[in-house]
Amino acid sequence: MPVIAVDKPLHLTSHDVVNRARRARKTKRVGHTGTLDPLATGVLVLAVEGSTKVVQFMEADSKDYLAWISLGAGTPTLDAEGPVDETADVPPLDGATIRAVLTAFTGPQKQIPPQYSAIQVGGQRAYAVARAGGELELPARDVVIHSLDLLGVYGRVQDAPRTFDAQSWAPADTGLTFTLPDALGEFPTLLLRASVGSGTYLRSLARDVGAALGLPAHLSGLVRTRVGRYSLADAVALEDLEGATGLSDLNALDFPRIQADAAMACELRRGKRPRRSEVGRYVVTLGGELVAVVDGDGEGLKVVRAWA
Image (cartoon, rainbow, N blue to C red):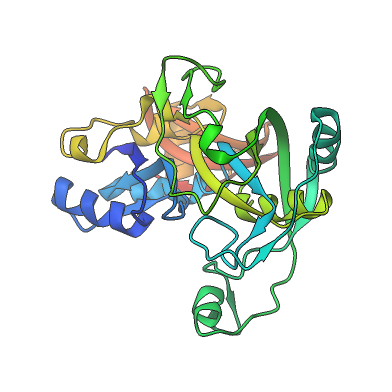
């Protein structure tokens, strides 16, 4: 019942990957902790069979990306799916100006999701309305952008690096090489390393960074390099899913641990609230086995989910 980080290939949906995992693992019980768009690649975390219980505790994990933002061309989808529906000449841009703009996007933000997204308003999926030629009024959402590092500015996306060191995720001569979607043209492109909180759309960030520079823009490439404790360097290929060992439920949960005795474990499994001084979310173990995920308020522990 492992939790497995998969390297999602280009052009597959997250649901495609889940279906392949179901076939490879011979089970219908496969979930994931957060989707990736078809034109994005990288870490997609899957939970198999009983491990689907931990998905709820991993959906809020922070995520790291490499993002290619092409300036001077906007698209309805905000990415390289296109088509280009707005263009503008891009003036010379210096690194200091771009970094100042990026700094303004770090920290808590209000972000309007893309029209081509799975968000529902009034029972309607935004992407379904968009594909039919309509548009929903999507409210801005609270997101957090932890950091945005400018790795380079290039005359066109075709000139931007594709190979990166798997530890620092800086451009390198050797390392992991990524395939980007077909470019929509020869547009000046920013290469960013981004660390963001759950629910952040990098497509929306591309749109908003472009707007702050006075330009239409779109996300011309995206690689997710980390989800929580899962790094792309440790992710398995789709063809290796059948034999992948992954992590146990306990090791997949990125919370501090409380070592319980038998009496406390029994109380928690019965839904009781043992008195403890911890504050925040914890994993409780007994003899190296997962007992429960709990929330502490300084006086006692409240069970969020218990394991038999």
